[in-house]
Amino acid sequence: MHSAETSAPRPRRFIAAGPLTGRIRVPGDKSISHRSIMLGALAVGRTRVTGLLEGEDVMSTAAAMRAMGASIERLGGGEWVIDGVGVGGLLQPKQALDMGNSGTSTRLLMGLVASHPITATFIGDASLSKRPMGRVIEPLSQMGADFTAAPGGRLPLTLRGISPAVPISYRLPVASAQVKSAVLLAGLNTPGTTTVIEPVPTRDHSERMLKGFGADLRVEVAADGTRPIHLSGEAELRPQTIEVPGDPSSAAFFVVAALLVPGSDLVIENVGLNSTRAALLDVLRAMGGQIEEVDRREVGGEPVADLRVRHSALTGIEVDPAVVPSMVDEFPVLFVAAALAAGRTVTTGLEELRVKESDRIAVMRAALELAGATVSETEDGLIIDGTAGEPLQGTPEGAAVATHLDHRIAMSMAVAGLASRSGVEVDDTRPIATSFPVFEALLDQASSAA
Ligand code: S3P
Image (cartoon, rainbow, N blue to C red; front, top):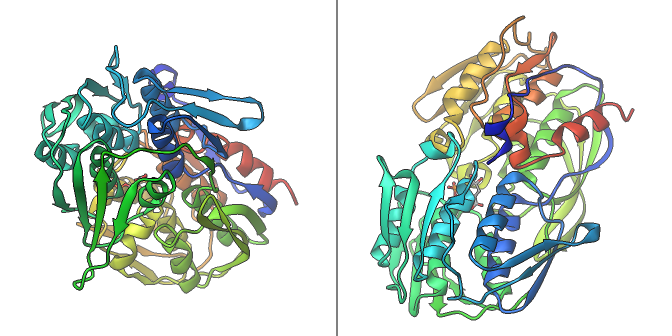
């Protein structure tokens, strides 16, 4: 089982510790890491991956793909090799697939299993077991898969896949890269053309990587601005050599920390800047953040740069809801930046945040209030009146921020602690290991590098 459920909570008080300076490198992108393992496991032959995120979520994906027949191994030097079973070749897992805390593993793997003639049970931790799976059950049922789920379409869930599945054309009712990817992955082993229509663009790593592995995938831009994505099955995937770029969602914590802590001048190397992921940087720049992109280049078919971030006076803004899909995971840390900006920041269109690892609207409101910020909650966002650079008070003696098994709440409030008078006590740092196991070590390193 996963560490957050078998060990005792690990609280920590994050306190102001001086400017963030020097150079750091954040671990590999979580979304790309999951997809490298899944597609590698479906290719015929050996895929090699460097820069893979070795966090608990990605390890859940690796364990599941092993349980369905792939061989996945870490070599010396941090290189991973994956020997795939071929599309259509997934084996019946002998035990329930433990997804831990990982929504991406669950939803994407449900897509893979749906078009194979196997049955799999998915289980997860308390956070994952509250999250809605109906959004993938619905299209995968249309393709012919059969489900038994806990009330509300939740885990534990048993999926009986079908082969051949039925190709569908599915218009996404929510802007979700996970739902898009689940249907496309199911389409790999489905004869005919599977189509997903995206009303607004979400992260496109699945499309890029499927093409890279040789799938017949075509993205259109329709006259009405929607994006129909067509995938022809049954696909044959060719093994690849993949270099995973640094995760912009992990870099985000250091970007905001360096903007907020006086005297900071930090370089974060090798950050993925795919435009479907990079909106946080635009929003922070519009608030006055000094963030420079140095040496823009391509890594693993994705745009990458080193980011130089300097302490900046920030001003509150109204965030355009159109940017939400391209920074959906970055709102918790944006709220922290807003809490120290001059004036008011208004966010709207964040309904999806309520069904992430925690209800990130309610949980961040409570967390920031406990740390002394002025915040009000609406149905679909937060309104934050910032301190104009004055540190937050910090959490009172004996009280701790409740992270609800949500890594991004823990890391965001750690950043708030750096910009506080008395520090911020976080109730449990264990969930950080799901996406960013070296976060605390890097934070300590950057704060003491001066
Ligand atoms: C992800 C998509 C996003 C994001 C998650 C990773 C992915 O979820 O929140 O952390 O890898 O496809 P949704 O697509 O459900 O918004």
